[in-house]
Image 1: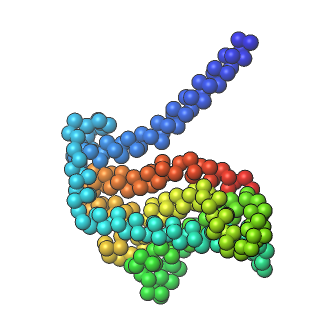
Image 2: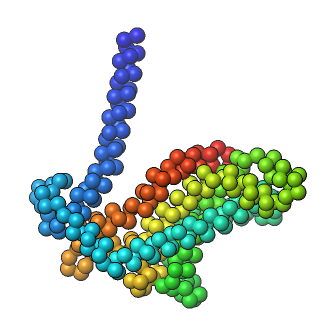
Image 3: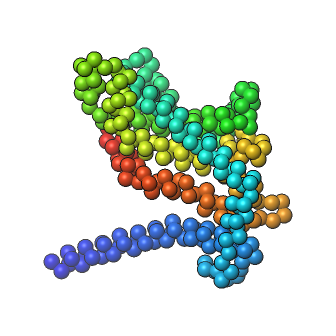
Amino acid sequence: MATVKTRRTLAKAGVVTGLVIGGLFAGLPILWLLSTSVKSNGEVFQNPPQLITEGFSLDAYRAILGNGAQLRFFLNSYIVAFAVTILTLLVAILAGYAFSRFTFPFQKTINAVIVSVQAVPPITLVIPYFGLIVALGLYDTYLGLILTHMVFTLPYAIIMITAYLNTLPRELDESVKVDGGSGWTALWRILVPTAVPGLIAVGVYTFMISWNEYLFALTLTRTDDMRTVPIGIQLLMGQHSYEWNQMMAMSILGSIPVLALFLFFQRRFIGGLTAGAVKA
């Protein structure tokens, strides 16, 4: 009996130790990010490095929030990320409903194409999309960024929403039709409200992907009026000096929207992911 208890105690201690090490590994870079954002540029290279600085200062945050050009980056990111999220959810709901409730020609082929898009490295599509966006006259525009981001958010959204709708019994649809309603009514009055946890999970994920996207935001924009937050951080890297404290401050400010969304929708987000994984 003592041996069993000892083994259980050692196992728990091992798990706790592993979690602590993992937490430190994940958390220390964030702490260093925060620490650097409240230092002066000179203190960043202090040797030995100090996590807690005596010269605590919010000058880096004041420089970011007091600069109209920097605030423009945040505005652009909000516009693009929210538009991508709303349009992705709308299209994915319609596509997911079709895949979940109907049978149509080339259904398996289309589904295979959607899944395969997830496997394509985005960097391989930079040049083709650059040429396409320029040809369509959408270079350096919100619409060009939004449509490009949707190419990478839609496949996941369609797959997840289809999986979530598959968990909802078809009797829900049939009950609406018995009462004289159409499939359109069943979708928007019954299925969508029921699928809110799944939609929130997809929406939060989509917002995160669009907000943090760097490669296409850099390639498909030219002027600072269209740049997003990730590009704004890069622009703080000057030719002769880096504004490290401002870069870290802008990174912190850029992380707040995603963190706030996740914390606010945490339960529904996790519940939506779990429910969507039950049945495909």
